[in-house]
Length: 501
Ligand code: FAD
Image 1 (cartoon, helix red, strand yellow):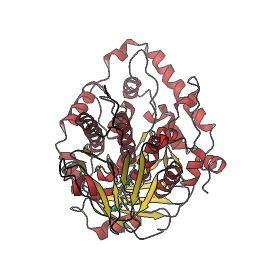
Image 2 (cartoon, rainbow, N blue to C red; image 1 turned 180 degrees about the vertical axis):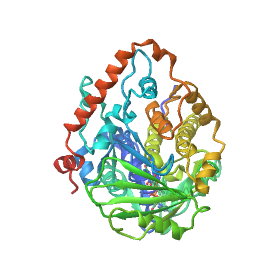
Image 3 (cartoon, protein in one colour; image 1 turned 135 degrees about the vertical axis):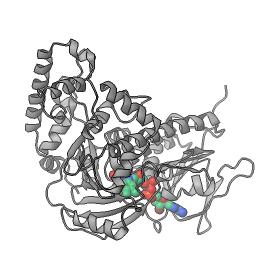
Image 4 (cartoon, protein in one colour; image 1 turned 120 degrees about the vertical axis):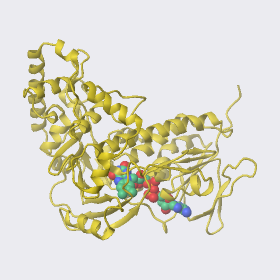
């Protein structure tokens, strides 16, 4: 055994959410002075400037950095998020919630939803949301933080944030720079490769400055300046499953206190998001340019704002899919440079976080053993594909009339998703394979929300005394309702603990 040939210079290209998340997390490595971290960003090019809804693991990322949550919420003008309301996805006028957290409690190893399916088919259960504390809180517009006591009903609270992505990047920038990350303003115009092995040698800026590195993190956004521009890694296009290819984004004034959930509203050729922050609301229409022209999409978006628009709609074009390899030689791509999945389940910022965690777990030395790259790429591909399948699920079982939605209902889905749906239809069974991001609870919410029902419930559920089952469900329902009623409303909670500053 020999000591590792430690990486001395990490160069991050890009100062959007991905770049500053990487810089803040990797700044821990520069603690002993062995590793230098330089982030290059171009003010002239700017950032994508959207990306406001997150999922609960973001709290673990913030905790890893040691951020004070009230300070972070105040400075990023954030609100709390307990789930996503899907409006009109199953059919016009229909609405369901995908809440965070769990539905009820399992009994004798039988999953809670099996009891609910049984009782609900007999008219003896309330709506599924009544058995998930986050859903009850969302419907009532309440918020409180979880209790650390596992015996407390409040231990069931799980949440994420809606935040201003530009303010989050600025917040992380302060954190990273205070820990020694060097920021360089400039435009990368050249990426020379080493003749012997095709590794990236340095990045060259427009003014001739050269920044050498051992490891390069490509956070340059859709253009993938290093991973694609220099290394020609290739891209797997998933447009045949997820055909939306444009989004128009526009901020609007708040029309009232922010609700503690995101809204995703089905539209003629895609869907519209509404993300409530403390100081404004983020809105956007994600659409398929084959089905609607840009002017009509803008008109639809602007006609469906709650408060007045604060700017003109901004267009973003994308191709859904992923980079064939997210780690190629001495370059790791994060964020939009690594691939794109529409923000229906708010997963992009999470995939940046997951990429950083994997990079730290497989952190190479200067020998760049290919085993690390291979493991990283296998795990990343799997994570992207699992999220892709979950997003496709939302489009499948719809009863909407428009051509966009009829095509979605007729599509041939990936085998991995088809198998999951078949298993659920057969007896309501779901399994979380290989550290999958979305839990059984998430799948249940969307499967049932989209009216995909099992043919029968789990026969083992019939072995448990039906009176006991009914008693437990009734008790849980009133426990959750009382717990939520005792909480402050979401706006008051923010005003008291973490108002924007
Ligand atoms: P960018 O923000 O594009 O940053 C790229 C950086 O690279 C910039 O600093 C730029 O200046 C720099 N750069 C580029 N070229 C050069 C160069 N030549 N020289 C120097 N610097 C350069 N994610 C979520 O989690 N939740 C959401 O709700 C959500 N909504 C979204 C909605 C839409 C319509 C889109 C398109 C994305 C959404 N995302 C969402 C994704 C999210 O915006 C991104 O994952 C996140 O912002 C990370 O972006 P980025 O840092 O990879 O890229």
